[in-house]
Each structure stands twice: as C-alpha cells, then as structure tokens.
Image 1 (cartoon, helix red, strand yellow):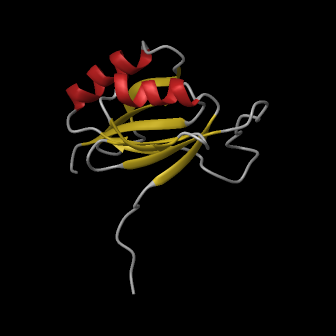
Image 2 (spheres, rainbow, N blue to C red):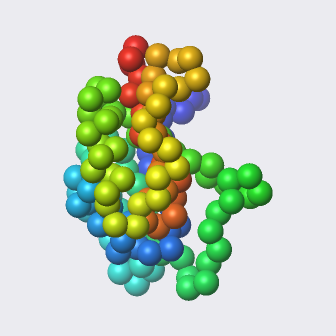
Length: 131
C-alpha cells in the first residue's frame, strides 16, 4: 500500500470571499464547487485542488512558530520569469501581505517568494531550475 500525492488541501480562512477572489481573479483558478451553508468554496488550477473554509468571527490567526498546523504551502511556477511576473501581480492584489520578494533559496537551484493571502494563509511560490 502506498500513497501517491495530495488529493486536496483544506484551508480555514478568515475571509472566504477575499480568499476566493485571490485564487480566482489573481491566480486564474476556477471554482470547482461550494457548500454555501458551511460556507466553503473549492478551487482548482487543473492540478491542485483546495477547499477553502470560512472560520467563525473572532478566529485567531495562526502563528507558525507557536502552533501545530500548516506552516505554509508552496505552488510551483514554470520559469524564473513567470515567478517574477507572478510576484508583481500577487504583491499588488488587495489584502496580500508580502513576507519577502523573490530571492534565491539557500544555495539550491531555486528562487522563491512568500506571502500571506487575504485570508491569512502563508503561501510560497517557487521556481526550481531542475524540476
């Protein structure tokens, strides 16, 4: 018995409409389904599949150094130029907080940047030269 890959990733966000807009309007993903009563929206880019779940009012933000849970997740980008172009677009999207701009990844043949999307989830975007 073995596992293959992540089927989907479920993320609890503080503002579902803002997070949905980030994935749809900024990254070009599509809505794959929703559960309005929860509320939840499911988005995909054709390869990755995320379930976005609205938290209750007053939910606290995650502290990656103090809590057990999702530290961040990373999305791969096809070229270094695409990474730089995506940073320009993402960093100007309303509600996005930039942790750091594109930079080399500690001696690896890769370049990456980190942001917090409008719903508070920490995300990495990465180009790896030998991928």
